[in-house]
Length: 313
Image (cartoon, rainbow, N blue to C red; front, side, top):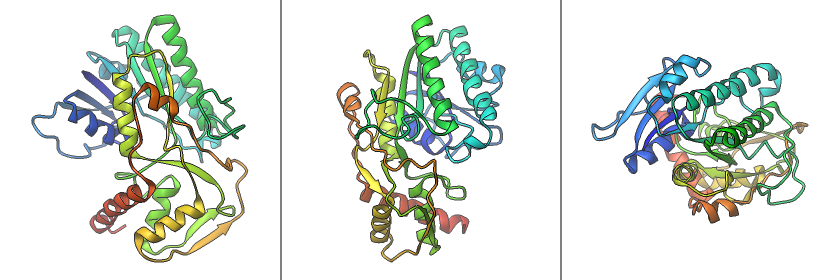
């Protein structure tokens, strides 16, 4: 299958790309200008690296032309800063995605898999674990725009027959996560632990999240590309909650030394607990997460150590 991956050179996208290449798919990876390929590709691997502006209808149309499916992994904002400029969030994500969908229609590309946010679209949970039928009431612009894109995907599916799959990914972590601007508790905390720096926790450390290793996320995308059933939205999660204090304990075991923790006042936009049910993905996609927190953090730590040696960050 010929697949274009928007954001295919990043932390999650590159892992998905490598997993798709194992199955001999032909890939076109679309990245921002001046972003270099994340590795050298073998001659047997069919990969075209393309750079451009995600907001450009011309660039996006060129990237989609001739493809069988689209993977949409681009987000211009993060949960923690999306409320600073919600207009930019909408323009750069929702409007750009609508342009992408129109380009798919123009080129008769009939399948798209979109990465949404299981950590933000639901808001404060009414019950746990959160399944796909749970009400959506996001507290940050990031979650609102993700949800808006989900709704537009459903609209285009209804109006034009495009096959749309939304994967509401929990809190991904793992190798290739950018350590100089690390996002997510695992990446930030592990980087600080390896460098011997204090770790700051907002609140008392009881905030609980559902963490999923990036290789399990990649496998879910592979299953979604192949999926031909009737469901269109899936949680991608471990199904297990880990508090920030429990995360600190795992990090101390992995790095083999205590870490210094500084507790700060809690933040109003932090949902206290977010744990997602992955039953639907297990049933429909035949997908099962396979990497435990302990194993995943150990693998991430080994990768991050090698990066710290190379970059001396």
